[in-house]
Image 1 (cartoon, rainbow, N blue to C red):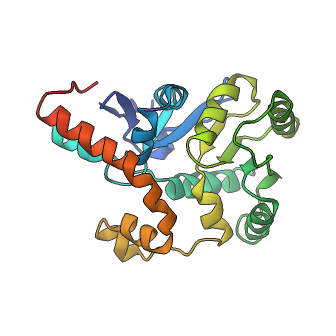
Image 2: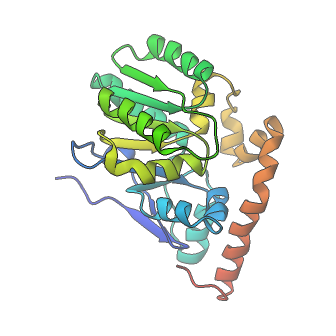
Image 3: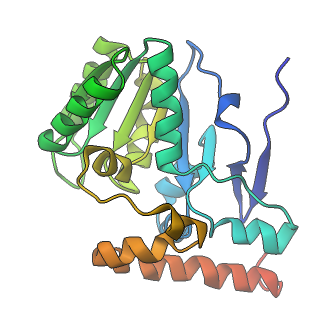
Length: 247
């Protein structure tokens, strides 16, 4: 019998803090996996639907180390890191070992073609399908129906969604009850990483807990996220000095 899955609840979010092997894929209602970071926390304070999508995730995993500062400072508990690349690496290998079916929803046709070509070389036992959705801020009912229909016709074990945050999480949340799959993972930036559109970060940066700095150097547009990140640290400070409750 499998041990109980570990979660840590901090700043109102129930975060998965265990091995990804504890996530069992079943032919029932699909499970939703999303990530939490200081940036997504900040966005959630201004976007009710996104906040709901994160809090109603079946598995909300720690993306990077800094959101865990909340649980370390407030509860003396660390949270196991399961970043987007780690999630993808674990489940793509699992699907390869089980000859699984995987659907990639998001990004451009060019990026999806690169992913397809790399999968052919590295994971020959996987049966993949791909769809690049329209590039627009809001999908129409027709857009959503076409995406849901494409997924359900293929009947994948896992759907990887790469539409950037918070669009991908909200899409999965709003459409989860229509999807015929076992697991939906919102892992946006991983599409570009696996396709080779973005350079790999040397492991030393991650070891020094400075992966965020290298990403900012390589992609200055990330600076736009800093106001949202600032909201996280401000709320953490307010909670530490007991002006704000830890919920």
